[in-house]
Length: 177
Image (cartoon, rainbow, N blue to C red):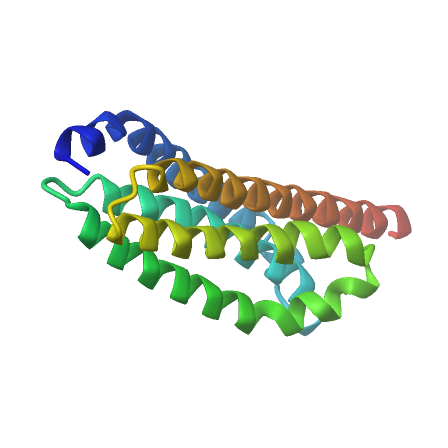
């Protein structure tokens, strides 16, 4: 794979990095405005939503930033993406007990898809893309598109669920008070 092929993807990764950085910032603003709703021992499920969104947005940002390093070569990107996949897998395993405990509040199928299956597939896709880059497969760049879309969809859904849950709880508190 030559440098011209990598260069042709520049605008895509610039856009994805900018979008994910902006969404991380908005997530921080939303959490800051609703800090009391997500703090406390009984708020593990809400923090898990926030962590899921942050981790997925961060993964997209790191994928993009690493891709945009000048004079990158596919082998270096492959190694970096494999490392990111290992870190992402670790984060998912660390968060799994909290996600499992949160199943009482939601239908398990929805939680499993948006918060477990989709991010897991994205992490596995990231590892496959890293290996593809190491073996000089130009199609690995297209696999990364699916990986990024998976992370973004998972993060957007977690952000949405967090927003809805906080809103429902605030409405319940104001309705009772």
